[in-house]
Image (cartoon, rainbow, N blue to C red; front, side, top):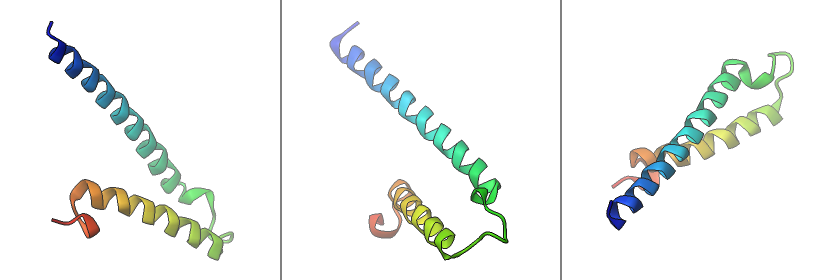
Length: 74
């Protein structure tokens, strides 16, 4: 095996590990969202709204980068 092939194997392994972490985070977020972020309609206040806006804004940064939208548009 050449040095280049070894480097590629390490990169592939690192990529797969990072993807697995992302997949796990997305699953957890989807489950939390399905549970309405552990709130009931009677509990919701502007603090909850602010928290969701914060989450949304961070996710938008990621999706804009991944899909080349928003400030990342070409």
